[in-house]
Amino acid sequence: MLAGGLLFVKLRYGGGVPYPDVSTAPLIAADKVRTVVELEYPPGNVTGSRDGRIFFNTHPFTGSQRFTGAFLFELVGGTPRPYPDAASQQDVQFAFGMTVDAQNRLWLTAPATLDRARTRLLAYDLASNQKVIDHELPRGVARFGQDLRVTPDGQTVFLADTGASGFTQASLVVVDTRQWSVRTVLAGDPSTQPQGWVMRTRQGPYRIGFGLVTMAVGVDGIALSADGAWLYFATMSHDTLYRVRTADLLNPALSESELAQRLEKVGKKPLSDGIAVMPDGTVLITDVENGAVARLDASGKLETLVRLPGVVWSDGVHVAANGEVLFTDSSIPSYIDQLLRPPALEKLRAGRPYRIYGFFLPGAPG
Image 1 (cartoon, one colour):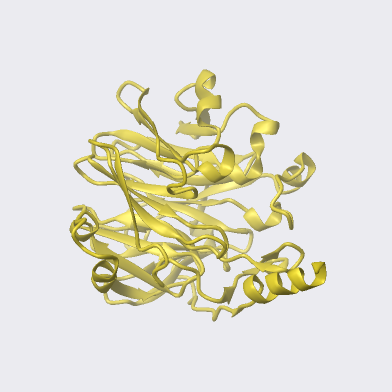
Image 2 (cartoon, one colour; image 1 turned 60 degrees about the vertical axis):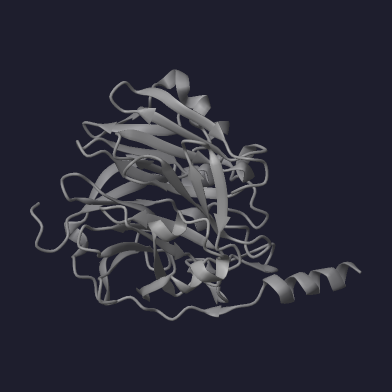
């Protein structure tokens, strides 16, 4: 029975084929990419405010709370400082996705899958550095809601729930912050579900469970257009970037099939993690297989911007107020073990230092 069960898992969840390499020759030389900061633990996401403040977190998969007391940081003069302060760090230790909204609030999501029964949303007012929102979603909703974006009016939060390697469905989640009503949309739609690709890492094909389960991740990176009219989303184990009008996401009268029919394909992409949208509609995409960041323009043209041989897993990406593109190397495959257990301190130490990088786009000042 055990052998039969293992065979079923392997056949059902362990398949896939290598993803074609869609990268191009980098447009920006490696020596034009700077190290923004070196860190003791792998960073996850990075974001910033319109006045140039930069925030980042330690990736929750590290389980770094076993070894340190700081998890969320502001970069001040090139030095990480616990945000909002050292005393508040236990409150934010499982923060995953982050974004700054038009009301100058730093939003965080702490997925239920990591440490709790319900997914939690927090927001800090950056003028006062005080927590102004702390809300838990209903039990069972957005259990892996690991990234978020907020509409310009501050009244709606969109979450990307990746699901769990094909075991549970991925979806987008729409949260009304006035009434705290929640709708799950596009659950099970092909656009949000992983396709049958096997990601490449330095250690070989990305499988867990001693080769029984292919690491397959659903909708992951999300980003809003500058005017808030479009939500762009990228499923990690998928070949296409999509966008959908936020007005359609906010319309409860649309059925799932009607909403799916209104999705637009932007173009082919690498297997990706974070995304960011430029004012002209160009989308920046981290390429997790190649230690790279690519761009996909409005016409669907895909180009690699930078590729660094030392980057293990290009993760979050953000365009800072001064135009510099920041991206993190969360280094995930180097320390996640076959049973998804938190890594030993010795394994994390072996990868030090971990880095956040920065570069300017071709033709940009700097």
